[in-house]
Image 1 (cartoon, rainbow, N blue to C red):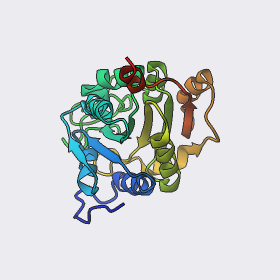
Image 2: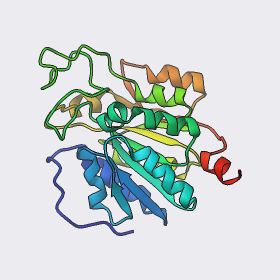
Image 3: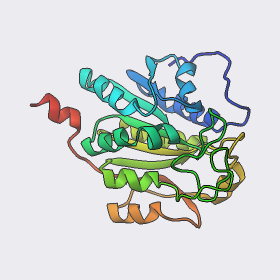
Length: 246
């Protein structure tokens, strides 16, 4: 697989570089891939890949990819979304895609901030976080993407870290290979507005294998350290299999 050789405009040190490298390695093992990305810094990843791709408006990556997968089930369908993109504007689409078990893969670039619009809080910003939109500190508790996707019915749920490219690439490959709705939260430091490189590098640790549903839920709320890896994986008839057999 070939990738575009054009100037990348992400800030030097952005976690998106690691995500791009990890995806290149994982995607090279597949033949028929379609990519979509939303609005935000993460969305530029489509511009750096020689793959059929499309930008969509805020929050609409899951329904767009659902239509593509229904039209051509042979495709490997991948969406890149941001935390603000998917969990603020588009949370209803993400939840329903998981509930349906749509056979698509969603990679969530989670930097806890609206980076492209220069630093407002998102649904995953930590409580107390000071930003342009919360100068006195974020008054809300952050959303837990892993727990949300587990209770919404996703059949593959994982977390990766942009600072561990090889590990992330393996997770991406497994997610893309999975039949059903795959969700991977990717911890992605934003050097300009939420630089979490040191904190994540100190706190993340790898889990060995997927676990049962209850254990995955419990682990998703661990706060003393940050687990990365595949939390949960199960088999279930996909939305496309149901629809195409009606």
